[in-house]
Amino acid sequence: MQTDKKLSGRVALIAGASSGIGAATALALVEEGASVAIAARRMPRLEALAERIRERGGEVLPIEADVSDEAQAAAMVQRAIGDFGRLDMLLCVAGVGVAAPFRNTTTAEYREMVEVNFLGLLYPIHAALPTMQRQGAGHIVIVSSGTGRYIHPSTVYSGTKHAASAMAESLRREIGRDGIRVTCIEPGAVRTEFTSHMRASVREAVEQRLGDMEQLEAADIAAAILYAVTQPRRVNVNILTLYPTEQA
Image (tube, rainbow, N blue to C red; front, side, top):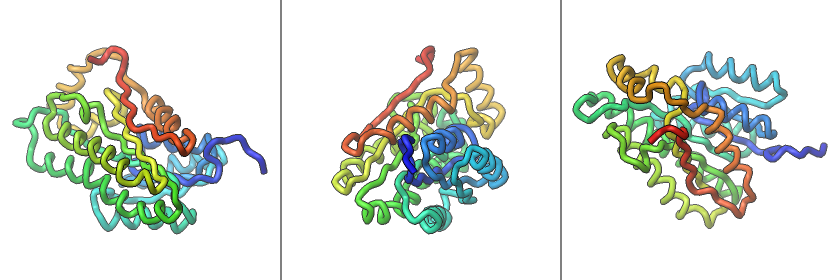
């Protein structure tokens, strides 16, 4: 059957899909014809998203996984490949953050940010690369942060996002000859559940700093990702930085 959808026949695995940017991206990709594996730690959230996707006629596989656990991340990738038979796009969206100065961040919070925001990229990418290399094509999308390019007063979080952005560009240079594209998305303030996981004192400081500024929506980031992954294969969108109009 003929279709004009740009991602028909393509398979995407979205790590960190239970809410926010990940969920919005899953819906956007499905609208363009992609089949999606959606992964996160919160299975009830994934099941609810999967139901929304099925109602739209999309093909979806929910996978419970913690990307900061190497074995779970590898199993997540293999499950997606095993069920769909291929993997065209890996979208690394999962992230945690404590937007606080170094002295106000605990060592447990340091560890979680490093494990999720950096190792949580390396593990699934490492597992997915052999399949993409055999296919001779693939696209890895890393959702970093504006703090990965511009310094903000959140030392550890900024450090993990600088690492993510640097890794994305280095990886792009390594694997472009294999037909695999790498895109790094660097958003500013986005209205999601991100701050809900922070300690109350940190969350209040962030909310005070943002004030009544109109933040980006998860759908804005999903649209940027969709733009990148629907370009011709000869085009690699290296970096997309998106900030709210009012954010300095």
